[in-house]
Image (cartoon, rainbow, N blue to C red; front, side):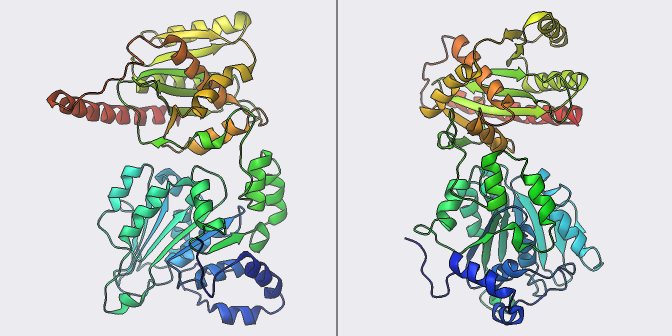
Length: 481
């Protein structure tokens, strides 16, 4: 049952507000009662940002819709509203720390806004701003569900999720346990708030839509953003850029359309709902590469898909390496990836027809000497090669390892063959076919037994293997960079 409050935020009221705000801005400003903070870097909130900031009586509010609507700025403004209260704490999250560190990210903007206040100290190690009165603004990430436990202790009065549809529902709900305040003093008067902002799409699209957007199931206000709502954006130029996106992604980003889903002719998004933090260590694994020969931005991508199969026959899409690189860089990336994967992972590269294909495979055979490597001649229509993986996914056999590449990978799969790029579909399907056609006798036999001292020792060994893999991945990233 949807939430029912006398002053509920509805799409009709938002649309009416858009129309009347231009006619009588002062009246709306007085009703919204938004006090501009000195820490907002000189920014004055536009209409929908004011609506968002005025919803202090709601524990949850979701600001979602089209790209460029000023959603991230609104989250940052909300975090900075109560910095004058001693001990106030705010936390802003992205799925990965790499996303926080990008130019024009929400953390980057905070550093720009607060740079002129020398009394506010920035702690690079903690990713935290500290005010003289003890108030803090912290930035964090939740790449995996287990990362939630990094926040099992601190108390916050404000938690914001930037690009909420990139998070799992578990991660979102876990942070509610960190929202609290004392019963006395100034801090007891601060509203407890959980806020989210996002475009449609992503691995969390369905649960976010159900929690906020769908009228019958919504539990909190949803503020729908449009590009036109942000007067500081060059809307004409941005619309021109968005016109280059695939049709479904364009409708999501340009119109904030939550109803359109990227379900295509081969793969369906609902088939990819089973996410895990990692695949079992003792899986059978293939890394399959689909090569592109040039680094021109209009070219296809070089993609290496690592796909694993466990003893029950479950499939894990474990890793995707993807880029537009020149031939020399491709060789370095493949070699570094092989070292990171280890010798137990079998490597296959799609072999193009003719002499040039044979020459390429010969070069990689020398480069990957010591690994189980083969070239696999391409044959048959692509749809025919994609179908076995699609069938396995439809039957609930495919799991996805949580990682930043998830959204782009699934978005491509559910849009083939209509999207411009299908390299990830080719690579993942190639690896799956190798697993299906070469699975050893041991794979497919379910091994279920009681835990013993041997199991405990294996767990310790796996932890050591995971740490070694992490260190090797860091070395690979240096090569790719």
